[in-house]
Structure formats: structure tokens, C-alpha cells
Amino acid sequence: MIGIVGKIAEEQALILSFALVGALMWLSALVSRRLTRGRIHASAIAIVAALALAWWGGVVSGGKKGLADIPAFAGLALMGGAMLRDFAIVATAFEVDVVEARKAGLLGVVALALGTVVPFVMGVIIAWSFGYRDAVSLTTLGAGAVTYIVGPVTGAALGASSPVIALSIAIGVLKAVLVMVATPMVARFIGLDNPRSAMAFGGLMGTVSGVAGGLAATDERLVPYGALTATFHTGIGCLFCPSLFFLIVSAFA
Image (cartoon, rainbow, N blue to C red; front, side, top):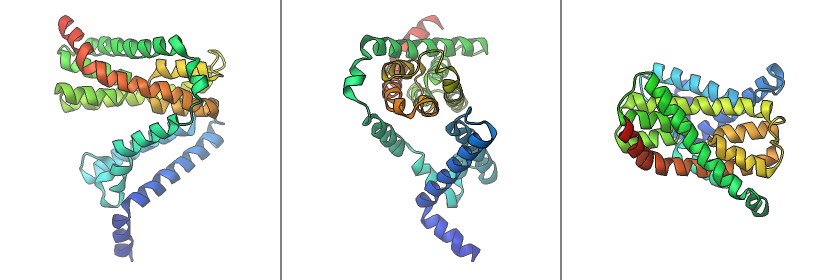
């Protein structure tokens, strides 16, 4: 019986991965509602739990893909891959009202610029303070502070070492979780209650998952607007970090 269940799980790995993620989100929502009274969004709890499960899967299997290295959970590699991630981001952006998006105007552009440059500079400074001196590592870690997607993209383009790329991802994930948790707490104080402010916020914070999760806990209607500028932020980071920013860091490193 166990063998049959295991075989079915392997053959329907993608379906099982959807069920697993759905169960994890349900449990996270329950924990968020019962233990934190909604102050910590379910998405933040789910991310931390998923990271713990990925670590456990890596320890048990001895592989490098977390739970996806276990045959029954191999579908997680596809579900968590770039294809479905990008599809979800694009689908979210389709909910944007163009009239409201135009209202961001220059404010959105400035937010995107600051949201890319400031985290990168801070990431480079912190990396320098921890002893990193080569331009490749400094740029990769600075890019990780932009988002956890920009970090590995930059590291792969520049030929950074695996530990540095992994650290850049960790920095970006930490940023996403912090943004997700802090957004509903500070929303009232920073006027985060309309599409224009949500777009500026998304541009400044940059992390799509962090912004989307934080805005979902604040006001679900604002999620598409924040996700829209945050998505542009990721693209800008992937464009400039391995090129212009790397050249600037190389000139000073």
C-alpha cells in the first residue's frame, strides 16, 4: 500500500506540490489568525515554514533543492520555478487600473530609482564591513539587498561563488519577510491607503513577495499597484546591477 501511494505521489508530483503549498498556506493562515491576531501575515509565516521545510528536505536527501530532492515532492521544483513565478507576477499586474497607475507619475519613477540604489549601496557597505573586498562579491551581495531574484541573477552573470550567491538570496528573503511583517504595522503612519502611495511603496521596497504579502494584510485592493512597481524594480535591478553598478563598484573596490 505504501509503495502504491509513493508511486502515485511520484507520478503526480506537481499536483501534490499544489496540495502541499495549499495546506501550508491554510495552516499559516490559521496560525496568523489564532496566534498573532493577524498582525503577522500568513504569507510571512508560510515563507519561514517553507524555508524550514526546504532545510529539512536538504538534510534528509543530501541534495541541493530542498524538498524537491525527495521524489514525492519533485513537483515543487517546477511549481517554485521561474515559469510559474513570472506567470503569477504578470497575472497580478493585470488587475491594475491604468487610470490609477498613471497618477503615480514622477513619484513612481523616483521611488523605483531610490528603491534600487539605496538598498544596493547599503548591501555593499554591509558586505564591506563583513570583510568582502572583491567587486564581484560586493556587487552580488548588494544586488541581494535589492531583491532575492536580482542577487542570484547578478551573481551568475558575474561568476560569483556559490556561497556568495546563496548569501545574496538569504539577504533578499530576509528583506521580503521584514517588509511583509512590517507593512501592516506602519501603513497607517505612512498613508499607505491608496493606489498612488501603494505604487510608490512598491517601488521603494522592491520585493514583489514582501510588498504583495504586506499589502494583502493591509488592503487587498492595493496589492496589484504595489506589485506592479515592485516587478519593474526587479527588472531594473537585473539590468543595472551586473552592468553599471558593477563597473562603479569595481572603480572603488
